[in-house]
Image (cartoon, rainbow, N blue to C red; front, side, top):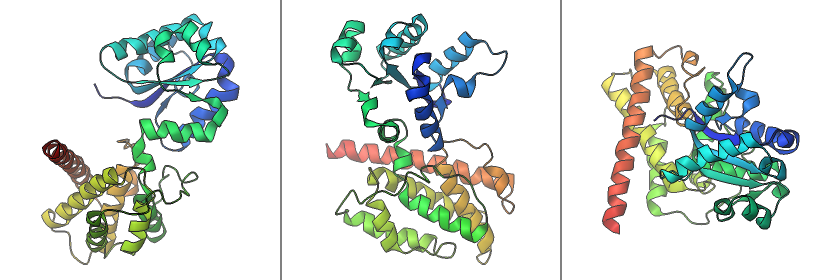
Length: 302
């Protein structure tokens, strides 16, 4: 079942102003697809149908646990719906404690007291980062792609909102990187040499900021393969730099879009709809193949 939202927020209405709305907006701003009633419900909508759809088609359930949450029948219904998915094998519940302690949680639901939770005491921005690490780690693993995209925006004039534009001044997280990644940065530099002026040293520096540089390496491998295949198989003129730049730009932004094509494809004037489809399908296929190979390799190593 394809999921439409990254996270569903279950909460008591009394907690909206202090916690839920600021958190929902912070997550949405960074590119997370959030099911939050204030975002989704329109005049005349059936409340029960919309909530059921959100519960079914979200990858995770963010549960804001508070004394007001404990007292509501509707939040109990939402929690039971999420627990039904847990029973079927989905590890999807992300608890957030708001002005409650472990004893309060135990009294309400023993299962929830055993799940690692976050507290609103750490603040909305810190909560957003921790939630993104779980529901959309790709957003926190895109330093090289974001830097490339920003440079392409300046050169091409195409501008699309990039996740973490405001939250992204991250420190170096890895003091050393494996040799294969440093070598790969040189290869990436060569692949995109005629459409982007970004040195491999800058790439290495940005990879060192990623939480999971191995996952980011897999994504870059898929991007580079899809780009090279497009240039080779569509016989794109070697001198057609503008079209090649659009192709690279589309792949970068699609990789950071979470699969959302809305308002994305209309930005590319030189790429036909068929060529845009070819690029995206090539990226998706390459990503699947490379992920499969990584799983096989890891299994063999074990």
